[in-house]
Every structure is written in C-alpha cells, then in structure tokens.
Length: 510
Image (cartoon, rainbow, N blue to C red):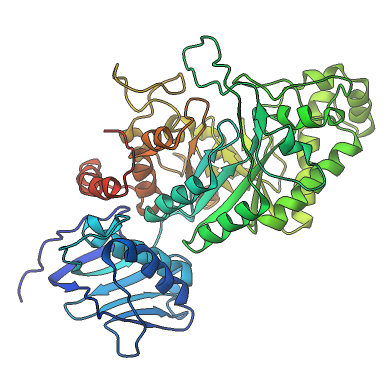
C-alpha cells in the first residue's frame, strides 16, 4: 500500500483530523454546486467570498462536482463541525447544521491559493484545492472577540470587515461594546439624547503619554438599520453579535444626556474626556430601572443573541454611600449597606433579561459577586473563572494577561503606542487554556470558552485596530477551536497563513 502523501497545506485553526491525499481539485468557470435543502446559505457565502478574486459563478446543477450537503444524522459533528472530502474530480462538504457548512466554507477558502481572498480579479491563477479528507469539530463552543466602539467610534463598514476576518478564523461571537463613559453608540427611540448628546465628546484623546488631550471632538452613533444589517451580515457568516450596554457604572455618557438618572440630578455632566474608571454611576430609584428596561427592550429587538452583556464591573459605590436615597433603598431592600446595591442592581436587571428569554453576561472582578443566573466573563484572574465555575455558573475565561489585545505585543522600542502595561505576546495568547488549571470535571464543563478583547483608548483607526489584533487573534482562534497544539506547529502554520492576511490587506504586527 503506498504511503500517504505529506500534508502540504496549512490551516488555521488546526482541524481536528486532516489526511492529505494525492492530487488536486481545480475550480473552472463551468464548476457547479449541488446544494441540498438547507445548504443554501453556505452556497451563497461561498459564491460571495470567491467571486471578487476568481470570478467563478458557481452555478447550481444536479450533477455538480461540488456538493454542499446538510445531513442532520451527522450528530457527532455538533452544531459547528463539518466534514470535507476533496478528490481530483469532486468536493463534498457535509455538516449536521448550517453553521457547520459555513465553517467548512472558510476552510475551502484557506485551501485555495491566497489570491482567492483578494478583493479584485486575479488573472492567471489556478484555483486548486489539495485533495484532503477533513473532519473538524471545535473544542470550545464560545470563541469570541470584543471590539470597543464606545471610546473610539468605528463606521459600520469597518464592523463588517471585522466580522469577515473573525469568520475566516472561525470565531463565532462578536462582542460589541456599545456604551461607556466616553460614548453611547446605539439609538434608543424613547431616549434620543443618548445619541444626540451621549455620542459626542469634546476630545478624541488618542495620546498615550499622559500629555495634554488633543482637543479634537470625537463622536458617532449607529442607526437601527445599520445595526440590524450588521446582525444579518454576521449571521450569514455564522457569527452571533452580542451587544454590551454598561450598567450601573461606566454610564457617564448616558448621564450627560439624562442627569436625572444619576445620584445628583441637579448636576450638569459632560461625556467623559478621560480614560479609567469614572465614579459617576446610575441611581437606584425606580425611574432608573424603567430606563434600563426600555433600553434593553430595544436592544433585544435589534439583537437576537441569546446572551446580552450588561457590563457590571468597575462600579464605584461612593455616590451611593453619599446619597440619602440610595441609603434608604439599601435599608428597604434589607441590604448590609449601599455597597450591596451593586449585586442587588445586577440581580434585578438579570432577572428582567431572564424573564425575556435572554442570558445576562457580566464582567467578574472576583468570580463570586455576580448573581446566580449570570454567565461570568472572568478577566482579572483565572482563579476567578474557576471560582465562578465551581459555583455552578457558566464561564468565559478571558484573562486580561492573555486576551487583552490593547496591551503591547512586544517590548521592542519600535512597538507602537498601546495600553500601558505588560506585554501580551503571541506565544502567551497561544498558551492560554480556557479551562483553569486544576478545575474538576464538573467545573471544567462550565467553561464555555474564551475571547479576545480590544479596548480602544489608544486605537482610533481601523489600521491601528488590526495592527493590535493580528496575528494575536490567530493564536487565540487556534487554541479555542483546536485545543493545545505545539508552538512550533502553530508558528509554522501561522507563517503560511500570513499571506492570506496580506491578501486581505490586514495591517498586522510584523
């Protein structure tokens, strides 16, 4: 029996099983698709992604060489897994669910020459796939990336590009950070000043050296139509957009628009022109909860994501400690003092979301402070992820020392300005195991996965965002989908993946 040929392709993330076979399959202008019932979204995505560079029409035909098949009996593939068989004369992509087919489409893209990812017609390229047999199932069901558009607004056209890059790497959650002290980006019909006032600030504040602010106004907000289109665009690529609306802290922009929602309604506030943690927080009177419910109802109307992030961390209690109304509220609720209003507030909001069929997500500072029905996003320490999982809560392990891409990528003097702090290097990102060390099986099963984060205090432009994100997101995507792989293997595959990023004109770190 002849030896199996060596694997000459390089996929990122690494597939669960991949066996090379002899030969190639070549797409030609007359190559057609046979599309089973339910596989139409995958066929549409394949055509959309390949057409700009290849010009291939990929028409439908019953006797086509390329088959996209949805087969619910393939239960072992789960919701995102797929099987791909490439022979010299045929291609078969199968999955149990449509999302699996969408993941397989991205693998087909990567198997083609890098020019297939370009945005303009490429002449004289042979559009060949290596013959291969792949079975691929993700290790973790939550593989996310967060982009902060509150501190520096990004146009929706860039958000679509951001989604395209996530899809290439089989990321499945786009966490969109829409509100903070420095800006409110989502319209709410009942509260028009949130975007009329809350989306604009006096300074863009891009200097990382602690010097004077630049004095250039900065602002922007999305329309409902833009956000709805983004949700549809992401869904067509197998990505869920999870919105984040911060509360009860990180709300200075909202209070600049509606001061009566705060603890000092007579105070006139600006949209914050500083970084860090602002001590201006929401009040705890009933009108505040009416406001939160109205906002979240509109969020739920726009975003079908089963998860909704409400922030919840970095909430100073100074204003509550000084407020007679907040003190009375704490006494009436039977709390130990105003500081306990934090958990009480989150509990009320979380219960509201649960009644509406959604799962609340919150940032965890200790792993033990979020109410029982929350999904915990643990960012400060892996021990907090373990503490939350051992409480029986679902956890996304997002340790900032390995998943925060606003930190520098190296200690080189030539490194571009970034968030002050220790280096988050590519190798450290790749080494991050979402399951905390020492987690017993019951707790390990509670860890949904991990995600990358890009806070934008020091990243105002798309080029800067991509320079901070790539190639670190490649490492996180590989670990989250594939599990642990040898560093040398990852680096070898990454080196062969970089031409794909270059074809997409990603402004990446060297």
